[in-house]
Image (cartoon, rainbow, N blue to C red):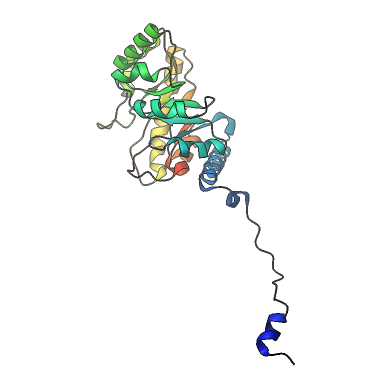
Length: 260
């Protein structure tokens, strides 16, 4: 007869017949990759809801304030288009990342930063005045460049925001279109910050309708609509956005929260 402790040590260990739950593809991903996949799924759902092709919507991952190492995580998850809003930060970050990435500028462009910005970005979302457009055109001519730009419209009339007033844009559209170096591809807006995404819808509708009127009146193609951020990009897609600018939902909260 064996002692109790010895018997217990010789006894077969109990094994559960239950298999561990299978992990979904999202659960197998790193957090940033999971975030990116979720945002893409939400874009696809919003496009389907509006009877649009998801291929008509591009995701701009807003990487401002995030270092190159964090951007690489998003690149490894399959994202290649990024947005920055500070030229000085972009000048340091972009050369440290793969050369095949695409970069858009989404912040307020200061006159003294134009010459540095133009070679870095394939599209500037935020040309917010005729004076700025003329400066961009002049510097582009000096440097032999042909910038692609969007016109930023302050559809809500907020005093704290940059951008053309809709009526001013209409009056200055001929002058803007006459600038030979600029390719104006569409419009951009940033609606007022709101707790509910639905509050942004009317502003997205206003931008789309303004775009439609300008196309008709000036016989120009303004196909691109840059609108929608982390809090409201799904509504923006439903209302016709072709470019959505999403940062926090992909990268997580910043140490000093800002709107992207």
